[in-house]
Length: 392
Ligand SMILES: NC(=O)c1ccc[n+]([C@@H]2O[C@H](COP(=O)([O-])OP(=O)(O)OC[C@H]3O[C@@H](n4cnc5c(N)ncnc54)[C@H](O)[C@@H]3O)[C@@H](O)[C@H]2O)c1
Image (cartoon, rainbow, N blue to C red; front, side, top):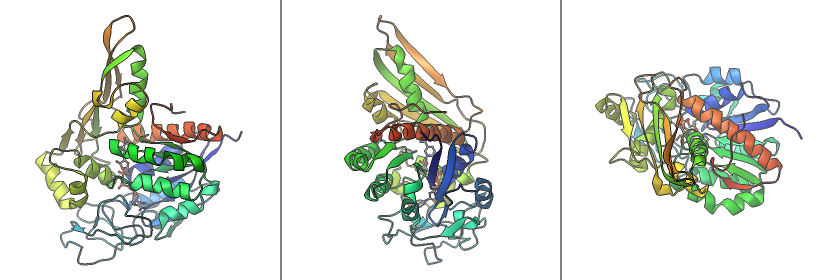
């Protein structure tokens, strides 16, 4: 059996760029396609990752924007202060909108250069800045058109609309894709939306590993291992720390999604917030946002693996956008009872030196490799990270 894996990345923002970077350090992975909301790059002999990363450094097509097929053009929606104005778009030929926030970056449209501290903006940002990139209004469809020769696709897309990733998966199935899909989504409710499509994905020949980033993902898998000492699991507590000073500009998509977990916020409110409003919120919290009882899919993913009830899982953490030091050590604590009646807590801890990008992309690619083996063995359907162990 051929051990080499060709793969594509949908969304080359903060996470997707690093996916390409990390994959260079893994054996047998050849990136052959990548897209963002403005462009696509395809080379079945292997993308020149170095060129692509250089071209998109500080210039990712992230942040709120219109859909893939409605490139941002200066309109009244542009706020003159470099902030954002609402620009909901319903006109995409990519079905529905992009899962991103419904607004348009202001300030630097057209040249993709920095504006008011926001590095990425405009229709020329992202992959189109690479010599390998082509502008397109249908980036995901362009990758689907090449998917016969792609073993696996990693979805590093925003998820500010809950059904965006499930709908993208369905489009691969509609095109009779036979291969692997892996996503790094966070929200519990999205897993059910994928399960609703499990038959469609399975009959196409797709092996889908969902929620395969850090949390959910890596830490869900760690909890599943830590639970093995016990016959009864009482609680799983996931507590994460992320220090993002140097990566803040490149991870605004993730920060915006995290804000939706704060008290008084939800996904719609976070999606509509301007960059200026986000900056104000961060300022109010002195750069440190603390989250409790997050709707992270670790809960439903542990339940579907039979480890504990979803309600026994709690996820929280601290995000510091002004320091690269982790504000708290990431830990998973699994408490349970052994067969011989002892009650104990197994703790899994990440080293503070490991970055969020390393802890999302290492596992995501590890799950991708493991899913390719399953797919080649004819094992199709929707799986969670506690049901599949990542390969190195
Ligand atoms: N599970 C985890 O541990 C974990 C950790 C961090 C981030 N994430 C998730 O990763 C996802 C990506 O985060 P990010 O910080 O990289 O976001 P980002 O905003 O920086 O990047 C998103 C990318 O998707 C592209 N995109 C948006 N709409 C598109 C469309 N319609 N067609 C094609 N491309 C499109 C954008 O151009 C951009 O390249 C988020 O959903 C976030 O929640 C998960």
